[in-house]
Length: 192
Image 1: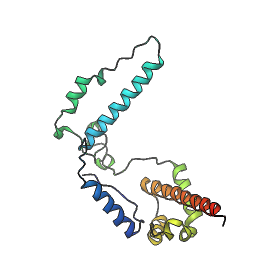
Image 2 (image 1 turned 90 degrees about the vertical axis):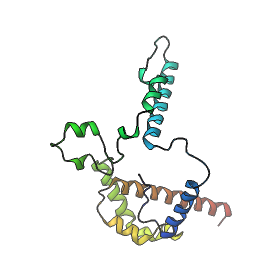
Image 3 (image 1 turned 45 degrees about the vertical axis):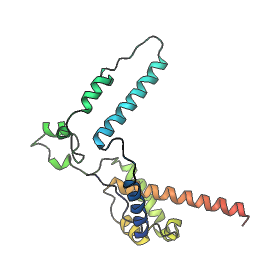
Image 4 (image 1 turned 90 degrees about the horizontal axis):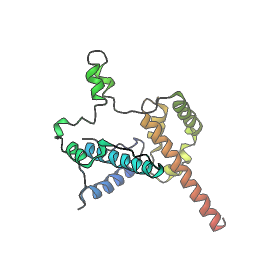
């Protein structure tokens, strides 16, 4: 079963509050329409494709675009495929894996994350960490007790091998800027 990942540098209080909130949603009386993640992703993809097709049909005058794989009956049949034929969420590119069996190590196909591994991404991350590392104690999120500054510093001092670390730090900085802008606005409103 897939799990929700949170940054390790969130304070214990924030983790507990988030867990409590998510549990309240999880155990509420509302039932999900689709409980299977693979089926949900397939349906979301189909909805998107149908939306694109609809937009194309509206923009073209005399050309009719046929999409045989979006026919209702075919979609219904595909969605009835038994779960044993569905692919594990931990496995990426199963057809390619079978084709390259014995040539490419299986770990290549079972990696935990996929993402942008470009030099520019990691360079920007390192630059942002270097710029902000000694200012972390002044972060509003730290002052509010949402972020554990020692855990954050520890994580930022390690190499960024996981793209999730970069994404978490980018979101942290975005929320920090947002909070600072609100505080600045509130200060101006009060005439302080």
